[in-house]
Amino acid sequence: MSEISCASIETADERSAEEVAEAKEALLASDRGEFVDAVRSGKLISSKCAIGLGDVSEDIRDAALSVGRAALSEVSDKEGVGRACVEALSTYLTGQGACEPTSHSEDHTHGGILAFYGHAAQLFEDDEGKVRAMTNMVAALKNVRDAGAFIGARALGNLAMDSKDAAIAMVGDLQTKALTFDDPRERRAAAAGIAGICKGVGITALAHLRIVDGIKRAIADKKDHDARAGALAMYAHMCRTAGRGFEPYAVGLAPEVFALMGDRDADVRESAHLAQASVVKALPLTAMK
Image (cartoon, rainbow, N blue to C red; front, side, top):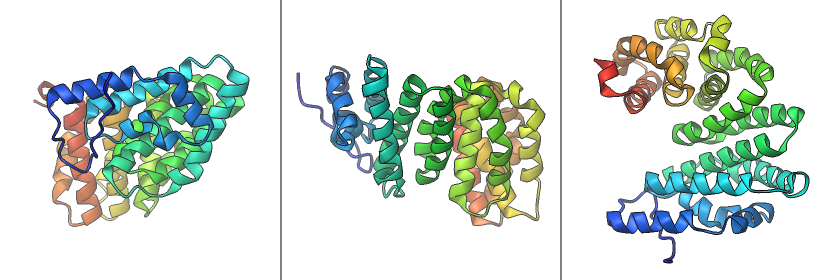
């Protein structure tokens, strides 16, 4: 078995398709117990999985996520080893992971570790601990960019599925932050949090909160650029994370979203470009015709 060869996501991948496939297979075959030991000992960031999370190849990044989740799922000592993993991952998120990513590679790594934390909390925490973990994840989403948030928020959805009432209760406050705060990091975290919760509980469970109506109103608010930017962030993250339930709304709102790519405000234009890329990534081209 060859060594895992990872390329930085900041550079062009000069490996051949065969080399990428070989690196992926090597990662998939790596020792899962070794990963768990690295998590518990605080050496996660130097593990093969963590290195793979920042690879330029999406296939290798996905393999790293798969191996890490599988390794955590195989832990049999839930009270001892399992809880220790949750604590160690939480420590990373509030320590090294609390620093804003300086590269795409680091952003993907932070997002992947956030996903590991959510998975571990779902496996090893009791009901109270799962609610606490959801709060921690929303807070940690401020410390990743959009790509990292797309990864981490999906694991939030799995926790929300297990703690449905508590998750739904969080959405109102997150909506307010997404549509009114002037800090883009706060808006992004709130938008990703809403999308993750929606993935877990389903969009119909949030119907009384009128999320889609809120997005529509904010997109049309010509006087409040923070509202427009926040609505576009919500749209982008719902497209990428919330699941099929949002697809009809994604298609219906697309003309208004695309129109804001020419907005007079730079933050709104940037958010509109993200929204456009997100809907194109999430939906088949036939859905947009």
